[in-house]
Length: 256
Image (cartoon, rainbow, N blue to C red):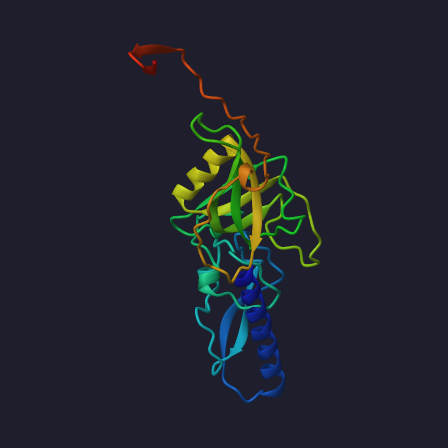
């Protein structure tokens, strides 16, 4: 979410600066760049109706900008654009990479969805772009293990979708969801799918700027509940019958 917000703010600021320069500095040198012809959502493959050429100050740097319309056609958007906002090469997926979520999945990563009736999305405040830790509570453990136990299996995972939402709610309205899609590496995706069949899953929301990975210790029920300890009554030592030996005036009892 932090990256998406930063890109949107940067794009909006650049657009405002461009309009100010065009209004107040007609003597500047200009060049053509490709911009959005109207508001565009993420995931859409660009057509000729979605883009147009616009004038841009030649002295104003615009890294990765496009100057020809064919360079943008057929490429899906990774992030949404406002009308008139310049298109940048790193915000476009390669042609043929697919629609919807596919362009937003970097090479080597996987979009993995998990379903649970108990997912409430951190009281509904679970949005695309935020980062979470994944906790699993296991109830059915091997006989030699005492359960139940809760373990953090994934840390700092990015949420791609929450329910049917692929973009953050601009109003910040909470939504309860029962399906969450995370952006994971293949081994992480395997761990998540295995955990979903063995226990109940809960997400813990974290600050997007917090990338620290910890080594959390599993939490067991015995750590939360102080079970009373029943004191065992001490057993009296068993006294075996002895044998009396008499030697003159000396008597000795021998126990077996």
